[in-house]
Length: 370
Ligand SMILES: Cc1ncc(COP(=O)(O)O)c(C=O)c1O
Image (tube, rainbow, N blue to C red):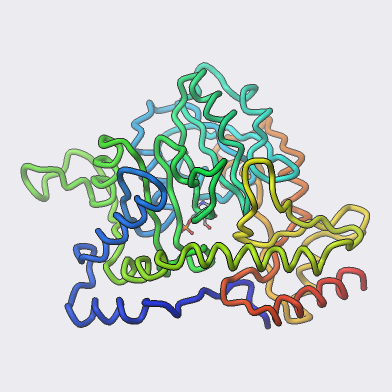
């Protein structure tokens, strides 16, 4: 089986991990945490970086840090991971979905204003799969309506929007370091912001709100979402190679484009827009209606031929758990509904070899039109 993802851990990872073991620093108090946070903040041009346990918890803290009033509405794309809606709901806020742009799969900017109500307080933007959201018009809407921006850059390490790093656009922004990301810490996440207040609040939420003067007396409920020194050691080693990883992913994406181009009934990912070139976090493809079957069948065929895949995200407005809570009764997002049913991604991990890419592309061509 060619795995859908495998990370590359052949830089300084082992050396830095040994350092943790040799010095006994394994907890979140170890020195790699600060090194990773400082290094990451500098890469995304932010004043503060706060390392946490994973990207989902980074979203929980980022949304809670904003202290929006209970019942306030937050706009988000329907086509995203559940972590986004979960963070909004857990903060006592109301998620309001907007459909995806059919070309980039990101939030359809032209539909955002229609979703704004008197209770809207924030927009959560999520950069999906390879290309960032079109940030200029989104930031303009946020300014005009006095909305906070939460930027989910979980998949966008090393990507830029008009030359500026993704992760530098939100009032507060987040990343994930799950092993399928451009850099990984096994499990891990990062919150970044330029605001001293939001950074301090995120740090408190990360660590059980241990606010002075008396330790173990709490005024508020936080979480333990700390990252360990072991994870940060991996992160420092991975961060050293971010530009190499991004270049490698782009080369992999271009090779897939070349090998798969011209296939009837199959939509390949958009390579670039006027503001960014895809980093191919994952290489997603969509099978057209004309083909006579959906992504589930394509996934079955590829699996039988030894190719690992993952289906696309499932829209938030079609999530049973959120529907049961009473959200999205009227929501319709035809683009998200379509790509969820017709899209999947093929092996895209950094350890994939050129030979494997050629093999996967050959199998895709063969089994899709069997
Ligand atoms: C857009 C997006 N946001 C948030 C997350 C959650 O990150 P984690 O898996 O580290 O909890 C992911 C995970 O893949 C993601 O793709």
